[in-house]
Image (cartoon, rainbow over all chains, first blue to last red):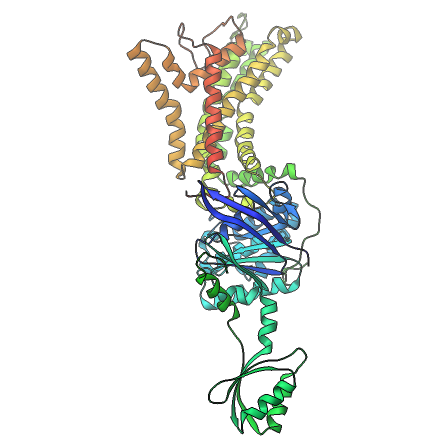
Length: 310
Length: 300
C-alpha cells in the first residue's frame, strides 16, 4: 500500500525548544492511530502536516507531496477535525459547514447539498438550522466531524474525536469513524490519548513520547498473531498426552499450573481441531481466551522505555 | 444524493478556482451585515450628502431651477472646484470611519474567539486570502461611500459644464480616487488589526476612534507644549488631509483641505513625512494581523 504519510527527520521547534525530534516513519495504514500521553507531540504533528507549524528540520510527505512545497495541494486533500471547539457560535450548523466546504473549493450549490448530507450523516439532521453555540458537547463534536467530511477529503485528521463525550456518544462517534473507514474512500489519522479509541478504529499505530517515536506497529498484524495465541484452562486426564498431540499438529505449547496451557497455533489450524483433539484425549476445555490488550502492552512498553524509544 | 440516504460519499465534482476563494469570505460577511437594519439605514443615509451635492450641481446648471429659487441673476450658486470635491470626500470619509468602527471589529474577532481560524486555514486557503477576504468587505463598502460617488459627481459636473472643464480639472479625478484609497486602506487595515487583537467588539470600535481622536488630541498637546508642528504626525486625519491637498491642488494649494481633514495654515508637515507615517501605520496593522492570523497560536 502506498504511504499516506512519510516523515523524514521531521523536526519542529517552538522558541528553540524541540517539540518533534527528527521523526522518521512511513505510515501506510488505512486508519492510523497517533497515540501518546498529553504533550507527546500528536497535535503538533497534525498541525505541522497541515502547515500551521513550519518544520525546523527534515520534512514530511502526504501522499508523496512535500508539505513544505505543496502545502496548499496537501490541505486540499485533508479534512480536519480539531481537538478544541472550533466554529462560529452564532452561525447555524449547516451554514457553517457550507462555508467550510466552499473554502475547500466546492461550488456554492454542491457545498450546500453536501453540508445537509454531512449533517444527516453524523446524526444532526434535525438541528442543522440551530446556532452552533446552542449545541451540546456531543453535538459539537459531531458538527466538527461534519465539516471535516463535507468536502469529501482523501485524508481525515481526527484530533481527540471522543474528547468529553459520554459513553453512548462516544460509541456513536466511534461507529461513525469505523463506517467512514470501512467505506475505504479515504484514509484517516486518529490522534488520541485513549487506547480504546485507537484500538477500535485503527489498523496501524504510531506512539509518540516526548516528541520521539516510541513505537510504530501494525495493529492488524498484531491482531492476526494474537488470534493464534491461546490460553486454555483444561480439566480431565493428563495434559501431557494432549500437549504432545498439539505439538504434532504444529502448535508451540507451554504448560502452566492447574491445567492451564498456553499455545501458539500454526497458520491454517482451526480451533475446532483443538476441541476434537481434546475429546479424543478425554480432556475438557473449560475456558479458551485469545490474547487481548495487545495495544496496551505495546503502549506500556513504549512508555516504560527511559529515552522514549523501544 | 438525497439526504435521507445517510452515508458518506467522496466528492469528485468540479472545484472553484483557488484565486476566487477569498470571495467566499466576503459573501458570507455581506450576508451577516445585511441582517443589521441599523447598518442598512446608516449606509443608505451616508449617501445623503452626495445626493445633495448632485442636486446642487444640477440646480447650478438649470436655468428654470435657478428661476424658481429667484437666483436667475446670480452668475454662480457656488464654486465647483477642488474644494467642493474635497468637502464631499471629507464628509464621506468621516462617515466611512464610523462605518469601519461599526463593522470592522466584527470581521475577525468572532473567528478568533471561536478558534475557527484553524478550520479556515486547514483548507487550501491562505492567511493572506483570509485577510484579503475580510479586507475586501470594508474596501467595497468604503469605496461605494467615497470615491465612487465622488467620481460620479465629477462626471455629472463634467457633463453639465463641458469637456473643457473636465480637462481643466482633471487632477480632481486622481485626487478623489487615490485620496480616498489612502484613507480607505488606512482605516480598513486598522479596523481589521484591532479586530484581531481586541476580542470585545465595542472595545475594538472605541479603540479605532481613540487612535483618531485621542492621538490627535495628544499630538495637539505636544504642539502646544513644545511649540512645534510635528505633533500633527499623531493626527491621522491631518496626515491624510495634507496628502489630499497635495493630490488635489499640487504644489499650489487653493484651500486648506477637506472638512474634518483640514490642515492648520502655516503648520503643514511635508507630504513625504505624512505618507511615510501612513505607510508605517499600514505596515504596523499588517504586522499585527500576521501575528494573530494563524492556524494555531503557539504558547512558548
